[in-house]
Length: 126
Image (cartoon, rainbow, N blue to C red; front, top):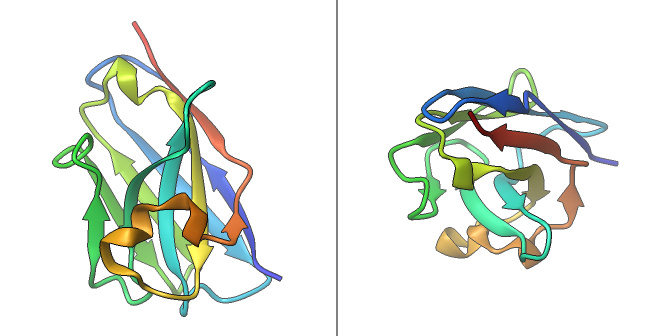
């Protein structure tokens, strides 16, 4: 059974950077598309980025384009989210999720995913 574990969250000042990792165990990630999502209390989970199983296709929410970069290292069974120029509105719990299908831009929709990590808190504040 696929298990996903996020790490790398923390407190960072506005304009700073963080790199989140999503490490998988129990199964290879080779056949999974991976999405990164974030959620703040009282709001729906928001898709911020996704990457195809081979890594050749990536998608980003408009709110993060140019600041976040998703990548994957299938040899390490890990997906990354490099977050630069962070803003206070990026504060949220960030989750990674996996699905064995590529839906295109729809891969930013949380309801398509059936394997989720536990989340990591990102706080952007001075």
